[in-house]
Amino acid sequence: MMILIFFFLIWSFGLNSAFTCNDDSDCQNGGKCIQISKDLAYCVCINGFTGEKCNNAPQVTTTVSTTTATNNICFDKLCRNGGSCMQLSGNMAYCQCAQGYFGIFCEDKESTTESTSGTANETSIETTTNTTTKSSQLENCPSDLNICRNNGICYYTDAGSITCNCPLPYNGTFCQIANVFCDLNPCKNGATCEQTEGVDGKCICPPGYQGRTCNTKPCDADQNPCKNALTCLQTDDKTICLCRPGYSGDFCEISL
Image (tube, rainbow, N blue to C red; front, side):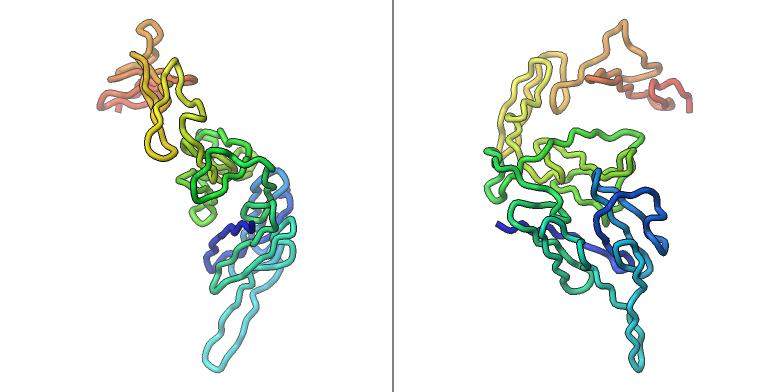
């Protein structure tokens, strides 16, 4: 089965082929190098430039009354692993992947094992679960480069590559795999999992715990670092202080 992965491009940008970013000088004429994975990158071109390294000047067609620029999005080697680039009207194109491959550029290979917990209308491809969480070091992708599905959040990592932070019960490179919530064993601290409608579910927390996966509890009185806080909550790896009005800071230590 052929898998069609669509991507949209605004008029001022060109999407270019796979290589590894060394620095922004890899892309010419003001283009920016974006690293998607260890061995997959592309140049985002501006001002009508195209080509693998944004090295092709805009093609200008002059008529009696108007001058227009044409932008050929498809070019050699844009789609990998035997995929074919199909340009549609305007600035829209997609890679039609050969059987056994998927991804924006057909860069990912399907597993021979299908997930038994996919949605009824989409084949679930087994990929490594993305467990990256948002931190102060992660920067959101531009809206036109957000490739994450099912409300996944796109981030640049510290290494400059793109990653998707997927909400439960989704995972996969692009959050494209819908799992049955309870099959993921997400509930912690002795909580039980209750399957609800479709693939979703909820955790029934034991006394003292709360949160989507029952990973949050009130801080112990003798280990409460919060100052001037209404509530102190302890998760698996951090303390959350909910400050009283007029205070801020990680531990509500700053008076406004």
